[in-house]
Image (cartoon, rainbow, N blue to C red; front, top):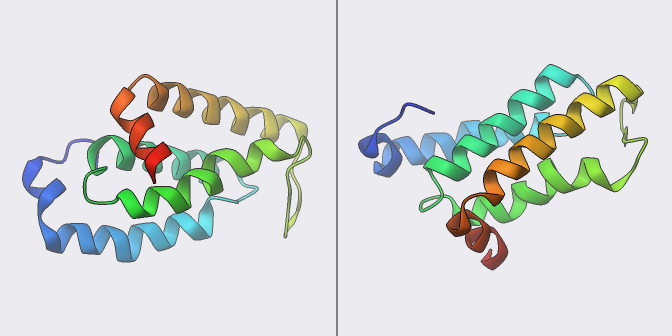
Length: 116
């Protein structure tokens, strides 16, 4: 995704595949208590916001709160599968803040997220 060109970023068939398969996988894994899974989900979403924002604006309104805001709501970050350890919580917050920082550096991404 990071090295995709304009054709992949704008071609309807590829965008539909990303929406159908990758977005479904992100929804399943964004609340994972397994740190590497969560980190990968957050970084994939960050790449999607940077590279595919024009074609996936409606999905960002769903994913942004789920991936970035929900883990920050509670200091214990309880999930359906149990509580997350403090080290894992810290590592997830570091990933979140790095992703949020990179998103906040781009004014257009911020306005797209706010509008949607």
